[in-house]
Image (cartoon, rainbow, N blue to C red):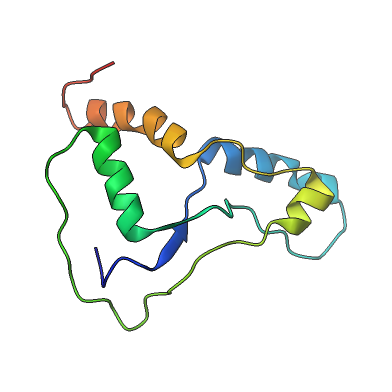
Length: 114
């Protein structure tokens, strides 16, 4: 964890992102940008705890100094995506991790638990 872990990020499950991208052609000639992402913020420290719980790991965390250019907050504004694409993310962070962790375990040759 860089710094005190209070910086926020917003994680978007890939299926949600792909659905948003899939809807983009509906905009035709509309030149304005549309943000796709998940506006549900979580601190990096909270994220580390969620990952540890989801994986059943007892490894703990390592702290490092916060880089100067590390953004303090990441939260996309998806108001336009909601309005023009009728889109918003549906998969919660914990659900996305539950779906992702077995895949990574398999790729790493680790035992997959159900």
